[in-house]
Length: 176
Image (tube, rainbow, N blue to C red; front, side):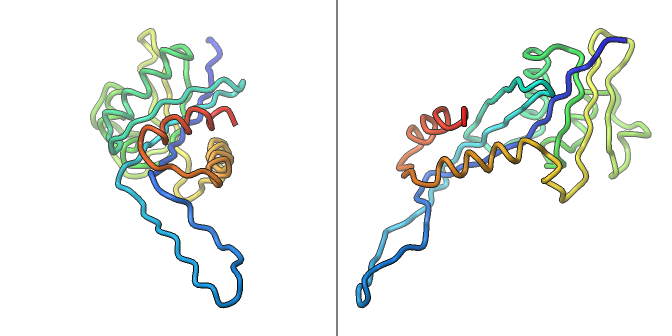
């Protein structure tokens, strides 16, 4: 049996707009700041391995199960076929299409119920992909959440006026 690489995945969404913060103003002044948040957004999918390698990709679209399946393929291409991937229970990761992609079966004992904790790939093929799910409502178990906290902190003092700037800033901020 070969050793598998462990990969933890999470997503981060950032919208075009200003960041509102409290501030100090002179007594009697009435400061107004125009703020708006746009529908324009970028969702970043980030993956970190047990040895610290990382992978990031993003989209302007809402995430779907097809993008979840695409991500699994991209992770296998980047880190090899022997993977254990940890995902949260977001709808684009926690669905029958993705389970069928991994296990090759639409309904099995491990895939057919609503309490799926793990879906294992076919051990007879060349690829050995296992997908495990974090328990619901426990984001602190996912180490990638800490990456997003740092990225949010990095964005704290930056104005993002448009989508092109947002994409540039994400590329600059990800190394943090």
